[in-house]
Image (cartoon, rainbow, N blue to C red; front, side, top):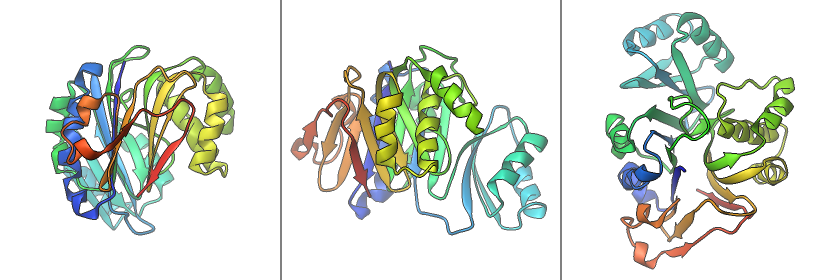
Length: 297
């Protein structure tokens, strides 16, 4: 059992309050996922050729030394913002070169996300403490995807926490369990796709991103997911400009949506939506099984 939450702000005047609105949503799902929590926030797009990289250090790490070294060696134009054992790096270095450099020089670092809009934070512990640790309430942006985890099929580590990412500016959170994640892995690994955990959610995330890399748009990739991904699931996905929600054919994993002129909010249970502005006048509904719900900023 896990908790999922998502929020897309339609009204630009509310985007500076994204974090304030999201934190109670995340904490409201603590009983569904007390082991770990994570959040992907989509912010202003950095200009080409720059990319944002979300980094995690399993042990105490001097981020300033890393920033100074990057600027003086492989990337002249870099900006590093540290948040405890997480950091957000903005640089014009090629992503493959950066990944190779991290592997060779700082193998204790883990690259959580890559893109032009996404920042990602995830860690073990109670969701309220994680939200406080990384000051989620200060986050600003257009939309956010969050998750609280109760581990049932793999280890409790930051790497196993959600959201999972693949490619650029794509993330996925999951409530449920897949019955065929290793079948999906066997399909993808010959394509050169590498897996970082044994979590079933990673299989779904990498499958959908692979389909988009092969030319599908998000909606077409999800359609193929209905055919290939077997099990019980509610998936919430984020891209640079969209939120997408789907449930399996049996729809046994809960989800509720609230829509107003100002926002779209999604949660596993209504209690995580009750604090939102004008919620009493929102259009509330339960998503149908095997139906796509996609919202664009």
